[in-house]
Structure formats: C-alpha cells, structure tokens
Image 1 (spheres, protein in one colour):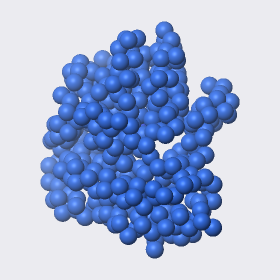
Image 2 (cartoon, rainbow, N blue to C red):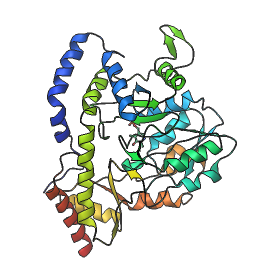
Image 3 (tube, rainbow, N blue to C red):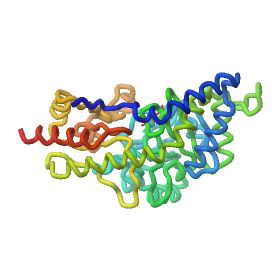
Amino acid sequence: MKIPFLSFSSRNLDLKSESLKLFEDFFDSEYYVLGKFTKQFEEDYAYFSQTKYAVGVSNGLDAIHLALKSLGVTFGDEVIIPSNTYIATALAVTYTGAKPVFVEPDEHTFNINPEQIEKLITDRTKVIIPVHLYGQPCEMDKIISTARKYDLSVVEDNAQAHGAKFKGQVTGSFGDINATSFYPSKNIGALGEAGALTTDNESLAEKVKMFRNYGSRERYYNEVIGYNNRIDELQAGILTVSLKYIEKWTFERQKIASWYFECLKNVSNIELPKIVNGAVHVYHLFVIKVERRDDLQKYLNEKGVGTLIHYPVPPYLQKAYEHLNYKRGHFPIADKLSNSCLSLPLYVGLQKEQIQYIASVITDFYDK
Ligand SMILES: *Cc1c(COP(=O)(O)O)cnc(C)c1O
C-alpha cells in the first residue's frame, strides 16, 4: 500500500466544478484586486469565526505581523510565544523589532503551558501569542486571564486550527486580534497563498486594512509606512467555496483521528495526542510521540507511508536566531518534542483500511 503524507485529491473533488465556474466569473469581472470576492470572503470568514470583522491578507506570516503592527508592537517590546512553534510565529515578532520570548509547552498537549507564562512577563511584554498547534486549541481561559492581569494583548496564531473550539468558543475569536493562514495544506487551504485576521475591534480591523494596503485608507494618501499584504482576489474566491465544506472536512478529519486512536491504543512505545478538557481538536496534524523516531520514520517510508516531522528544529536553535544566544538544552521540552514527534498522514479522503495499514506497520516495527 502507498499512502502519501498529504493529498488534496478528495478535497479538490468537492471544489472543482464550483471553482472552475468561479474562475470564469473572476476572469470576466476585470476586477482583480480587493474586489467582490475578497468582500464576500471577509464576510463569510468573520461569520465562521464568530467575530465582527475579518480582513484577508497575503499569508499567515503577514497576518501575524500585521496583528502585532495594529497593536503598536515595536522595538524594545517583548512578545511571548511557545518554544515549539513553526518559525513564522517568531519571525513575525522579529519583523516588528520586538523580541520573541519563548515559553515551554505542555509536553503531552504540545500547546503553550499557561502556568509558565506569568514568570516570563516583564515591563516590556506587550503581547502573548498562543499557537493552537496541530489543531488543538490552547487553554484560552487561563491565557486570557493572565493577559488581563498584566494588561497584555492576545493574538491567536490560528493557522492550524480553523473551526477548533475551547469551552464552546471558536478559535480566532478569543484574542484582541487573531491571525490565520490558508496555506494549501491547512484545514482551509487556498490554491496558493492567503491569510486573514479576525477581531471584534473595529479600530484594529481598520488599522490592518490600512497596513495591508500601503498604509493607505484613501487612495494615494499614506498615513503610515504600510505594506503590500493584500489577499489575492482569486484565492479569496476559492476560500469562499472552501468555507462551505469546512464542517464536513473537519468531521472527516476527526473521524480519521478516531481510527488512529482505536488502532494504536495498544502500542506501548508511542504516545497518542492528549486532548485537554473542553477542547474540540480539528486535527490539522496527527502527531504522535515515539521511541526510535528516525528509524520508525524510515521503516514507514519503506512500507510506503509518508510522514513528516513538525518540527525538527525549534526556533530558538535555528541559525537565524543565533543572536538570541540560546544554548541547546535551554528549552528541554521543545527539544524533546523535536526529537520524538512524528506526524502521520491525516487528510480528507483517507480510508479506514489505510489507517489500519499504517497502525500495523507501526506495530510490526516495535514487535521486531
Ligand atoms: C502555516 C503557519 C503559519 C504561516 O502561514 P503562511 O501562510 O505559510 O505564512 C504561521 N503559524 C503557524 C503555526 C503555521 O502553521
């Protein structure tokens, strides 16, 4: 059996005919930037996120960056982020001139440990960025209450958790202003690059609209040093179509995850994802912690199963962040996760027999 790590074929089947029609409409509209498709998508994504406003932008990294810009984060500030996130979270902080301050995750949920945040807050701290890693929401009640206590803003990095919920509330609606990505592999994926911000705060939404469009509210008048971070009009159209399917796709992802839990529950050399009380996980990734990770990955590959590692090197050990002067071992939980986690295939269209096959290969590996 051959099971690639990722395939879009099943999702594309849902989207194809509507997307081709949409392309024709787009093509004939002769209006290719911030037009009616963007407007529709922003309305629909705000509704999906249960926020008053959504603003489409170029990608997820730019979305986090603009969220921080809209909050006035600048040189000398500090921004708290998890030590085991994708590099984008750290880079967006660095772009503003602020310093990323890393907080260790809970090693069983992979998400930022809310109990560890407070001791890292200084009088320079401005923002906390919880990342809903792999599709599981962070414990937002604790994070928001810490933020309130110290008068900090919260920006959710919701790139991996479209539609996830914590205690009944959807991710992307907790923070002051929140960022997401629609990179093709995300749960809602564009056919290229796109991202968005969500907020209930009209003034922050207006600021982001200004920053994404050259710092201009009125054409040819520039109030601030802005950027070209506009969402691509065609991607906005495609995303509007995708939004009609996200509930169905999420349900399917959760079903596939439940097969993994069922088939892998008796394998003693691995640890399955732990779901926090009150969390609805949307399984952007199915990440297990395993013994002899690299050998298992090789074995799975020989048996036709594609896997990836999210992520092999934590941001604090990247060459790009050498100047922060951290030594290996400074964030032992991030290190441990980077050495033991393995992402198994999980995407719309996978069948139970395929999950059973993957589980049997893993079982064989440890039986040998
Ligand atoms: C994908 C991702 C991003 C960045 O999104 P891009 O659209 O690729 O810029 C940011 N944060 C996390 C956690 C991500 O997974």
